[in-house]
Length: 243
Length: 180
Image (cartoon, rainbow over all chains, first blue to last red; front, top):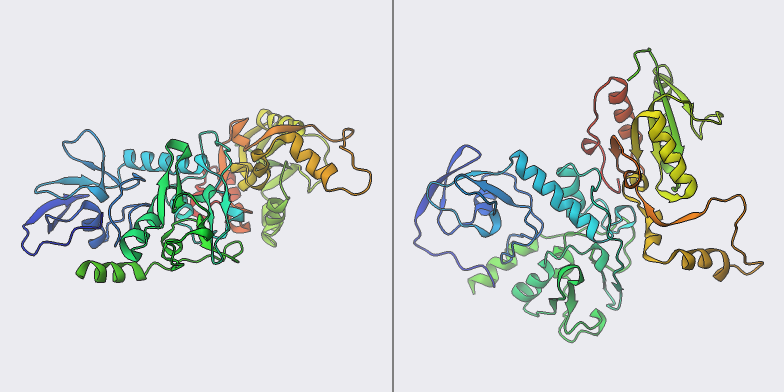
């Protein structure tokens, strides 16, 4: 679902984030308020301009009076909220989440075309992941090079579904989708056909640009050459939602 | 850490490309400064044939891919006070671990028979048996310091060694990352 248009008449609420007194519109989410106030919150599936998915759980925050952690991207602010964004507990959870992402598929950074330009790699360094404490699954996943311009490497996919959402909500093609469950879960084009045979793909490349890792890349790129540009997204999203 | 003015350092190269040792040498003129603070008692870079009983810092490059790698890792853990996992192969398996997708017999056959035109044969003498699964160092022995990177830069290695020499615990995440 696309993000709902902002209502013209909404109340303003006051809250504290990391001890700072802040005010925000009540239709905003915690992550939006944090980004507006330069409070860093890590995220992989969240991307400004796309609908909220809440899958990666890296943006978990602690809320006073709540036993469980809440995803900042999918929780709206309310009056009097007291939020902590970077406690030791959150750092521990985030580190574990990133480690599990590395252990699940085969992200061999040194031979990845997105090496040096990868959000997962950056997140690992940011969260202090210098090794993975759980055994690697070592499962095999295929590569789809059938598209003449782009390539899909499931080994490097973290199932953030940014590609699915940008294709549906911004491009309007809905070529991408998700199939399977658990570790068998993977992104697909059309009815799990090779990407190059897709009838709906417009070859616009938006999915490639929003992909945080080396899962979706341009053909012909070598190690470290795939640099992504996501500046177009908020602009296109605003124009789309203004229609 | 030793109370003597110099600390002892041992390094070895398991399943990897030796790029981490090359990066070590890339410290250039800082090596002279380093030599005044450490004794390299065992390494592919020196001629000593046996690992001493007591070493302050052991540095392992490469992943655990064969029986020989396994033995060396256990020996380093046993004789070194601090064990450093140096580089992506040591820390996460990296390129050597990409063979884990295939059966070992298929890998060996591909390397020594399928792609060889003259006298295809699998070597059995003088080479250690390969393990079926390639593992990072901490998959078989405990590791104290992890230094990711392919290879970690000379600056990163210098930082880690300097911290260890000073008796501090380094934070390699501040200077290197996977694939760096």
